[in-house]
Figure 1: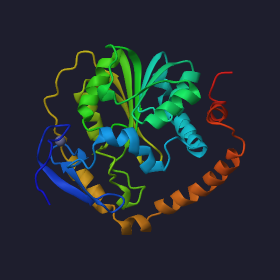
Figure 2: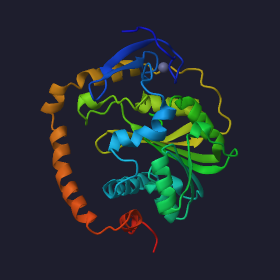
Figure 3: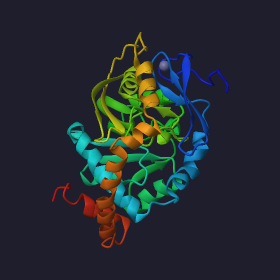
Figure 4: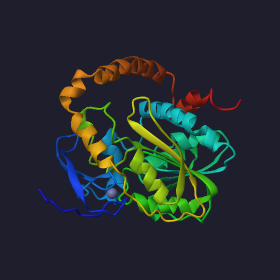
Length: 321
Ligand SMILES: [Zn+2]
């Protein structure tokens, strides 16, 4: 095993690290390291080249399809409604919205229908083009890193399950800072590295270059010129959300150390063993929750002719009449 790093910590720039895991969820070799100074967790070396991976392969590897299936759209619609509930107070009074990683377009379409002016960026051609043709969305195919907008073009920037995939989260957040208006809002959702709802062998994914907890995500966002307003978790604690306001005159943070965070994350990850997991209730609760959901999904599928009718039907109650 190599005992050096291929890059310093993206949050605090330290090179003091420990190895947290050497396997991904398929049992393949994947070295996951943790910064001893702040607790940021990342894959080192990066197992993939993100720009090639996301343009073509990602959805195929994950879902076995290049365009979303009706079943996936139905699930994504429910996720989009949930996401909207968590963010609607912060969207109040905003108009120009940007979604980074708009995927199949379900969330952008919901916001569009609610009267917001929405732009999207999506690296996967299959999904991005699908969202344009099915829902008429304004989506650019590509990465935030390679996209240009005029400074202060947006009131609200939202990104869900993207930041863990990018090769330089600091660079991306600084770019988003420049695109936001002076009182603009940034909303981020990522997997929570402290989650124990999943099987322990599923904690680290090849596609997730970075793994965050509440403390590292908050400090990263503050370092990039934002003030954190709120952080919250999904009901199973599997996902972590953060809402922040752009700081117009940020002063550089002098201290990027998070005392005790390295020890905290290491303890949680090491204690989350297969034995503990399968003796706890969470895998069985997960399974039990899945059955009615699958039955309901199967029944709902019979009524839908196309993608748009899935979303329109799911969003009916939330949209103004
Ligand atoms: Zn660090």
